Length: 413
Image 1 (cartoon, rainbow, N blue to C red):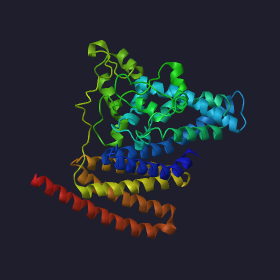
Image 2 (image 1 turned 90 degrees about the horizontal axis):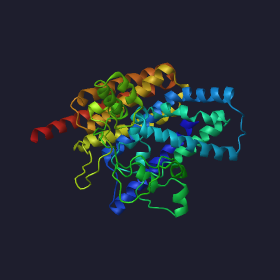
Image 3 (image 1 turned 45 degrees about the horizontal axis):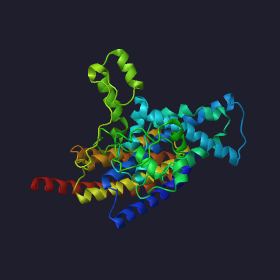
Image 4 (image 1 turned 90 degrees about the vertical axis):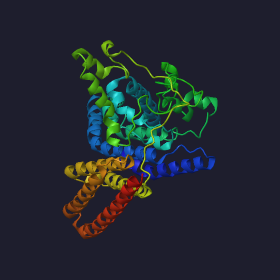
């Protein structure tokens, strides 16, 4: 169910992102950069791919609790749906709060905060693993007897609501709305790295929870977005694991008791013999420079855009046909999607190894699609063989031509 609503929501999301981009261009206040936006969307695609891998586990876990341990089973009504939304947001508040204040959770949730821009594409930049880590926090909902259909409908509504609040073009709304609901103004505060804004406004829909539990902060001056230690990479996979890599590197220098404490400590914590806790530093807004590395080769930028469109089509088809695909090919397709996104990031960053890796990826995709169609959709095998071979030749030629242009540019410089 979750995959289906996201599948239908994707074109709506993309249209709204395009509209926000056009409004920004018209107002000459665009908050979009090609490299950042493509990475946000690729991270979001990866989140959906991994979400499909985890959905059977999470749905099964919910059903076991609901069928065997629920205090009572609530009927499927509008009131139970609305109550489920409130309950979902209450537990989301705590999951989100712990996602910022406990290292093991922050290591996953940090992905959503890495962009140094603030626009609708950031809403889609979601962790590949945070949902899996945070799901147990929502156990009270099946215990209270919310039907799985109601729960996942509430989850869908909760997710869709949070999309529109990731914009800088909507100012403060009427006071009564700002008092009860999460709004773009409140959520801009949440994404800020300015010390006065850090660790504030955790609620998804009802900001009243932040007011109740002492984590509310209203927006004053323009926030600075991102994370206190910038990612400085367009690699979606690295974005999802880099914080854990930093944790492991730090833990190698710690005593055993501190290694364990590091897992549940607040981000920024270190033992006293390693310098102690370090909070968010003040932001030097005059000299603040965003990470903006990108190839200047327009042919490669066009190539990345086309690859992104194909990745998007691929994840959409994967979501639509997910229940028909074998476990083996499920993992193969997720691997292909992740590899393709990593290649896009490497091209943006001008990584030297990408000019070998991309040829290998194109060959792997050719083999993958044709073996899949040969075993599962034989009636379409010849069509896939011809079309994929033509695409293979086209992309090899395009990438080779772009690489030659890149080398000529480097030689001239």
